[in-house]
Image 1 (cartoon, rainbow, N blue to C red):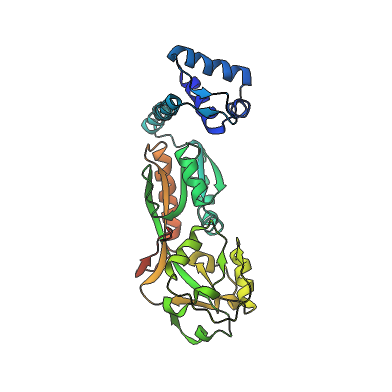
Image 2: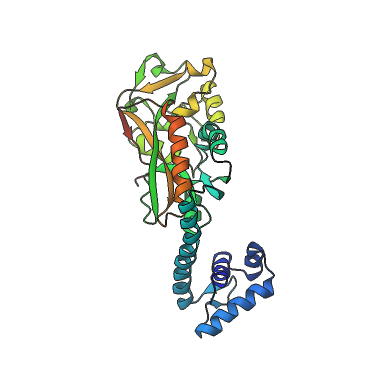
Length: 314
């Protein structure tokens, strides 16, 4: 039994298809099938039930796959130990970033990081939180940046910063006369929201869950994947919206005049660097944390805040 054979088993378990798994492993399908058959013959069991479409794990196969993940991770750790001993920070590093953080945070740190660590090849994906959790648990990401806490048993979290929520209120709105607002000033029914799957949306729903007041003035329902769309709709008098603080820094002066900060403690989200508890490539994770913390420290200076969890309470 070899590490390569176990990697083939994990690929088939994930993709439930021998041909697709072979493509992902960069081998021919007969080669992959033959190596998996060798393991099954060596162990005297069937890992996969090939009679089902898609292919399914047998009961014993599920236990083998669980153990195979541990073995492959520990094998990867050997190279990790060597890199740390040599002080080498390099190689491929796969990171996922949630959509409401990517556009603002990535330009702040990416150039600094690649200049400081030119031997690291960052492979960056924009993913929602559920996709990130799945890919971290399956070993397809080394780390991610997401709103926390997530309360995932196999994932560690290092807080990078706390980002306040800021209200975007059109000129003709009744609460626009206030210098600072409170959560109770908001009406959930007129809030323009990101579409389902965004944790920032869930944080808003948590924040305003007791503020649903129907006044009959809105005869449409829209959810968008873009803050820019929500801002333009608000400018047309079609509602209000909330933005993450870093997103407000790039608004023009006219739009900035429509921003309303909350009274202390300001509602905020916790943004963290998250990674598997196996701590593979921890030296790169630490390097990434140091760079991001350095660039964000001067941009966000709010102290009196209230953390709003992205986990929507039902």
